[in-house]
Each structure stands twice: as structure tokens, then as C-alpha cells.
Amino acid sequence: MKISSLFRVVLLVLFCLIAPWAGAASNPDLSGRVVFVDGDVTANGRDAETGDLLVGPTVLKTGKASTIEVVFANRNVFRLGANTILKIDFAELKKTVTLENGVFTSVLKKLGQFGGDAAFVLKTPTVNAGVRGTSFHVSTDGNSTYFCTCNGSVDLDDPDGGNAEVLTNAHHGARIFTKEADGSISVKPAGIQGHSDASIVTLADRIGVGVDWTKADLDHGQ
Image 1 (cartoon, one colour):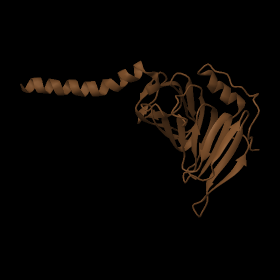
Image 2 (tube, rainbow, N blue to C red; image 1 turned 120 degrees about the horizontal axis):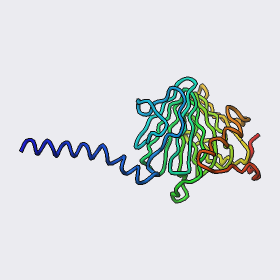
Image 3 (cartoon, rainbow, N blue to C red; image 1 turned 90 degrees about the horizontal axis):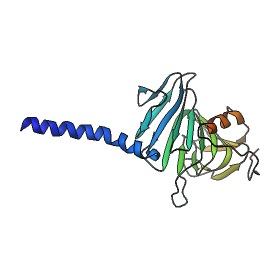
């Protein structure tokens, strides 16, 4: 009887460990696949390698001169630069990403629809970004965030709901959100920093999509 009970416990534990991976394998919307790694990169504290399947809540960390690229939901991809800490739950259809520090670049082509709400939300200590499908580049040190809508449209505001703006650009338009000494957050326009057309196109190539730089800007912000 004791052996039978122990066996059932072992089976239950194995099921709990395997089920998320089996679900992710059958539904790519619920997982991420590492397609490139260079340098010191960990996923939930373990060394990340090309080909790794990422499921559930995941903390990605990159070291000095390190980078990782992850494809998720088939036709969406992001890249992390050096010294980055990022949290994401791949099990959520509506992805919410928290960028604590570092550099994040993404090309989002295929996202689900949630009644008009953004299917992808990125948060830093000084900015929230709601994305429905676009290319963008972000860097933050925790006090200041640089956000560039490289090609597409993004809903921006700060954590207090202020400084709301829809930033739409065909060829790069950026803002810098900075936390001031009094706790308020200021916003100012910025040019291209830390990325280029080539870096966006290279990332888009990972998911086999092109970037249309020819559309008219609605709000270039320069």
C-alpha cells in the first residue's frame, strides 16, 4: 500500500513537471524558442542555449557583451542586449514583459486580439507600452527609459498614467521618459540611439518578415 501511494505521488510530480512542456509543444503561443545566444545568458538561473524551449514564468538575464534572441507565437521575436534583466510569462496569451534594466528590441508580427487592448505590454520603471504589432527598441537604467517606435504604432504612458501618447512612425521616432528628483516623470523627443535599420531588419529576418520603411509617419516626434 505504501509503495502504491508513493508511486502515485511520483506520477503526479512527473505529470506536473511534464504537462507545461507538453502544452507548450502543442501550442507555440504558450512558449518561446531560443534562436540565438552569445555570451553569458541565463533563463531562470540556468545557462541558456540555442534551441531551448522557454515555458511559463521566465527571468532572462544577460551579462556583459551578451545577447539572446527568442521567437514566440511563431512570428514574433525579441532580442536582449548586454546587462539586461527581463521577466515574461510565456504561458499567458496576452504577454506582459517587465524590463528592469538593459536593452530590448522586438519585431512583433502575429499577436492575438483582446477586444482592442494591446496583446503585448512592456513595462519599465518609467514607461508602459501597449503594442499591437510593430518594431521597437527600448533601453532603461531604471531611472530613465529610451523608447523608439521603429516601425508601427505604440501606446505610451508612464506608470502613473500620465504622459499618454500614441507614437506612430514608419522610420524611427523616440521618447525618453525620466524620473525627476521630485518623483515626477518628464518626457522629451529623441533621435535614434543604440540601434539601426540594419539591426531591426536582422531581427525581422528571424521570423521571415519584411519591414516597410516607406509608410508616412503620423507622429515622427523629431
